[in-house]
Length: 137
Picture 1 (tube, rainbow, N blue to C red):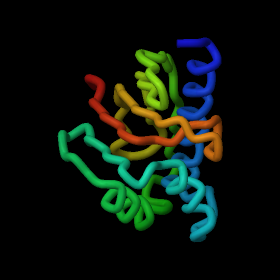
Picture 2: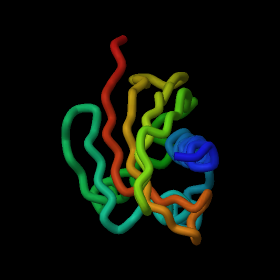
Picture 3: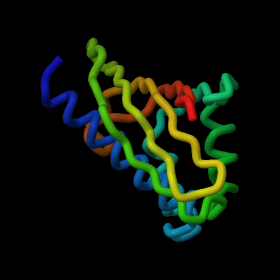
């Protein structure tokens, strides 16, 4: 595990959450090209285990998010404490905290993400899997 890998992971976590914040808060334009910036950051095999314990496929996640534009006016998302847990070949695993505020129902969460290396992707990484757990309120 190199510091370069950890820096790339932290930068990618921050980048994608800023895009997500813009989309959900409605400050980003509601266009197919704007949404593609988010969607293209994920592998075709991407899965999400939500904080409620539901496993979703990439298509389910993208379908729900595409419809959620502007659904959380005022939402702010910050990421903190990104830490590289493992790196083996093309796979990297990180943990981080996702801090949500400014919107009704905003709940922060602890996350574990799996990335695949892809030189064509931002920071050389694509999201393969994400597991979220709500933080105690």
